[in-house]
Length: 159
Image (tube, rainbow, N blue to C red; front, side, top):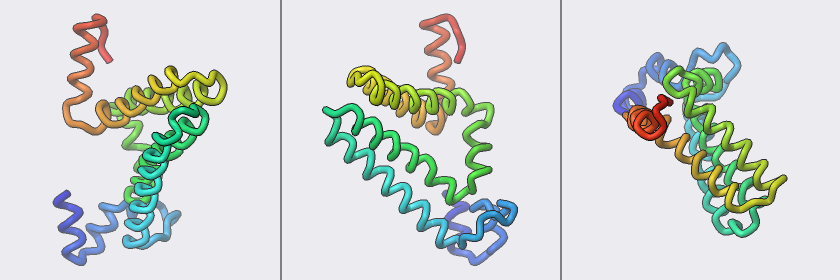
């Protein structure tokens, strides 16, 4: 957080470029301001879709599509800040690869449960696991270690 405020307060373009993924190989020609606007727009749209999905929870198809689309928009919003290649590198980092695999698997399972099976309960379970993988296992410090220790105690296996 300190790096972001420092780079925004000091007009040091080298720090801004390294912070916001300036080494994208010339594929991204967005300015820093445009990237921040893109990030904010995707994040707000994603959160709006997730909140609106709660209104249509009784209809599993609409719920799963809205929630999953909103979730993917919110996760993808950081690609505006980092760049898509660096976003993928971070997501498939050895520390986060299990959470990413669980997250992407649950996205697919939630859509299958909603679109093909039409099961509200299975869709809700997949969504809960999806959120858990997204938030707890990946981005909260020491959450992966806590889950790993819990899995060792309960199932005699490590995650």
